[in-house]
Length: 314
Image (cartoon, rainbow, N blue to C red; front, side):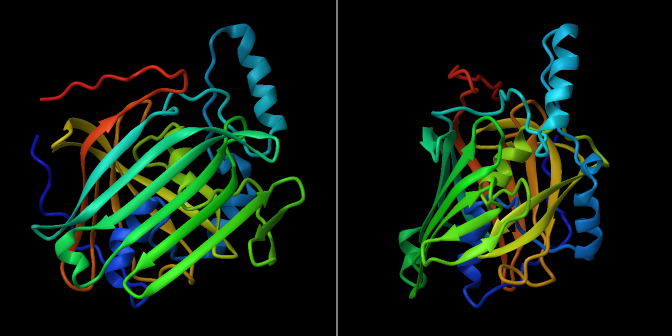
């Protein structure tokens, strides 16, 4: 099946560093935390109803089903008991295209498992780098690190190192879900919404969920000293072909409310593999001038047990 090249126009309207939003913020989080909700209050109301979010359980036998279901009820974050979506050693490489021109590269990887404040966490890393040609006009060298709790699947620590043109921004934050506080490196403490993700861990968390066409998933997020709701709409199924292979995909759209990151007229579409790993293979958006795509070119996938996952390629 051919990739639909007649997608409706997508427009991201953000800070003055438009190119950096497309290559940096957009790709560092691989789009899961982009766009803006039409009605934030409705989403917060949905978030207060834990039944609005579906968290699948991996059930190995009838005897385990009741036990795991009870455990999920006791855990307000509804963390999946087991995930095979990813594991240490996974990496995904993307080519960032500005129209028909290569604008840069992005890399996402599960670097290792590390201890953060007594919790075993997946160390997630995302990097974005503009090409030599684009760097002559606007140099991007961004890195984001996230530490996702291996057991509860909440963000424990987040840092970003941003180099976008003349703009520099460094930030570190620890998310304490017991006290309900996010503590920043400048000493600022901000109230933290329960079960919050950061802009990178949100993608990996969504990858563990069961997604069905026509459904919506709600995820609480925290970034830049603000709490906001993230809604992920599962639109349809499509098959797409990239340099990494041909994939059956779910087409999803993330929608959020975050005045400090994006203004109201933003939209992004992501193609996730329609399997238990939900790997992002394609992202498309339209910026003020031209369009941006992130295309998966190569990957090494590993499940939580450390086993290499094979994908059929054509």
